[in-house]
Image 1 (cartoon, rainbow, N blue to C red):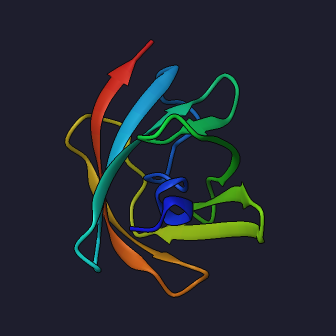
Image 2: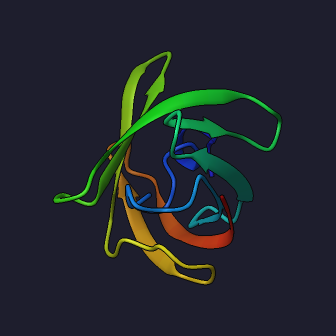
Length: 105
């Protein structure tokens, strides 16, 4: 999973708790966890790096700001509870499965 893909998150539904942690298992075999702060629309990666993101609920698409421009992922399902998983496909051709591992208010 590239850092940019991991920054996208599991269909981060706008009504989720203040922070949602999501584990990304890319089809390339890489796995990493990112935390998404609903209050600030900021994602924090495993190395402490941050990026802003937006969520389109109707399209189930999450976009993250990157140096190369917006990177967007579309999810099959929107998750909101620990254990929810969804397949995703990104606009750069990457794909995988994202699973919510923690929620905090």
